[in-house]
Image 1 (cartoon, helix red, strand yellow):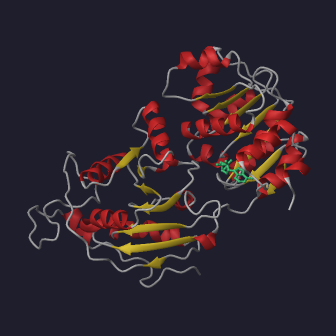
Image 2 (cartoon, protein in one colour; image 1 turned 180 degrees about the vertical axis):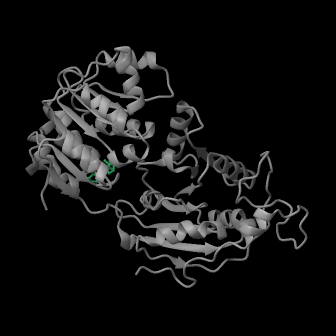
Image 3 (cartoon, protein in one colour; image 1 turned 90 degrees about the vertical axis):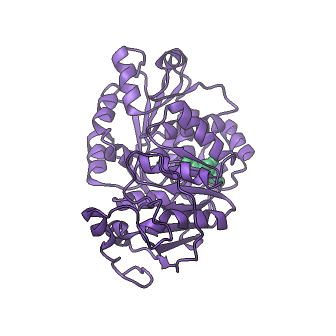
Length: 419
Ligand code: AMP
């Protein structure tokens, strides 16, 4: 294995790497740092957690950053923009560089001031365009542009904005693209905007031997009780609970707290300052259960996540891959728990096409839980308050509910196994 010393990295960055306690480069770092420092265009196939920020960070920090806005990193989400900025500040702490994150949902005035002395900008596409339109960002000196999580930017519909931003940067520049998948759209960007890029593939950072995936088949009315049971049982480490809608996130968070499981919520409906505060509380382990939607948690690297619970199964199997990648990182063990009711079976069958191994678990004996019904409209697969563990239903079943109750069984009944 290569050591950091052989990759052409400046002493000041090597010192930061040493202080951070990184002893060996990750696969993507080993492959990319040298060509990046040499100024080559790179397409890196890698997930968040692979160490790609340091890989491109070395290039941005040591070569080009003395001028005003010499590099720009585009990220799909605000949280990722903040995370990348924090990482780059860590990697360049022995130098005096101004690393400025710009993203929406917060005051633009402060950013305008900070942009005046920025060396490296980390931006979400929408806010960056806003600054371009106001004339408060000058990209004419940019030497390196990084598209971080490029596939996510495509999925989230940001690609037109990204192209507009790239058009404002000089043609003579280095372009670095990192993406978990290399879809046809990514290949189009590569062809249109990059100069003979070198392709680098890194294996997933999540160690499959350390990742256990299980599922429970449960009635919709018992989903929440099962979640409470499991969270109480697995009380070590940080837990992420994924839901498909903001409403469901709010409902679950409220009710977990109501059942003495301290939890916080994150989704796109909160202000940016609230989202930042929430992430901080979770990362610092002040609150150990974070209930979230896919968008809010996308691309985040949070050490110490022991369990990922899918309260709802995502429609898109890429989201499942993203969710499970939040655990079993850096050599740690992790468990993914899928809580399936009939309405999740279609999504689950699609996810199984990934060829993953998911073990069926028997439903434990569940205790009665308290449900606070504070929503006007009940989320579609939230438990019914009155029917819990009672044969008597006090609410009339609708045709849709009956249909849901009769929902299709999962594709296979025994352990879900790959082909
Ligand atoms: P990234 O993929 O850039 O989001 O990095 C994921 C995490 O890995 C970050 O928390 C980094 O601090 C950490 N990291 C980056 N490079 C290394 C390394 N060579 N050894 C150990 N940890 C690393």
